[in-house]
Length: 386
Image (tube, rainbow, N blue to C red):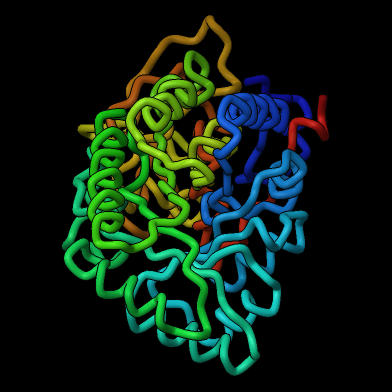
């Protein structure tokens, strides 16, 4: 990724910098994979990054949107996503959010409980409508990822447990205010072991077969998202392995004629194109450690503090002549967890250096906060500079 360091000099840090060319290349690669199977549909997971510029680029590629709040539904539609391509998940949809989605004419509610199903039915009936719904199944599959971002275990709050799904489906078919569209699954995030997705396919195939044997419809299949990216080598691997990901579903997911398969990728679409740009404030020489203190913090990029996630620090100001030193790279927020990397080797850091934290395009800007009364970070785009 190219960084216009000279142009950065006039900008207040920290801020997010997005390589829009890389984003468009990524979208082209995903579109090419989708084109190999006419029944595949993509819904971008808006929670990964709702930056308006990025949303307009993604919607222009014809993708749908995967939303988890009424605000995301409104934001997606306002930035070019067709309402009929919007799917709405989330375990706690409030009445106003359901009404917003009904009035917008979204494509599908991904329903996560029998209680939610009944609420949607009642609200749709009150409007003289039928709400399109898919039932989110908790497949009880453990993905190889951080415990905070697994969603497919029976102990997780998401979805309807396997042993309950048949009863909830029968109720769905009886309710006058909803129309059954299919089944929805999602097992977690930052998954790089394709065997996890193969296990999901096997579980879907088994459930579909069981429902069919009981004379129940299956409808379309939504397999969620979860494809991970390489956080350690952003330049060697600037894109997720989309070919391997889609190949798993081509080879292992049994589909029926006329059945559509929906995908909800987010991180793998936008993570590689974004970086958090900070300035080095001080190098603090301790008795046991050397600290590189930057002006960015957990308020702009909370993932290291929340998940112990790694975002590669890169000294953009250093040339090849500087010696390497070992630092704990930390932010200024008054929390011991405000740490980006420990015992990390960087070219010698000097006050005023630009330090980038790579692969921060997903769950960076979208999770930023005003803790310590810090202002939200601004965003800039490669298309503004090159």
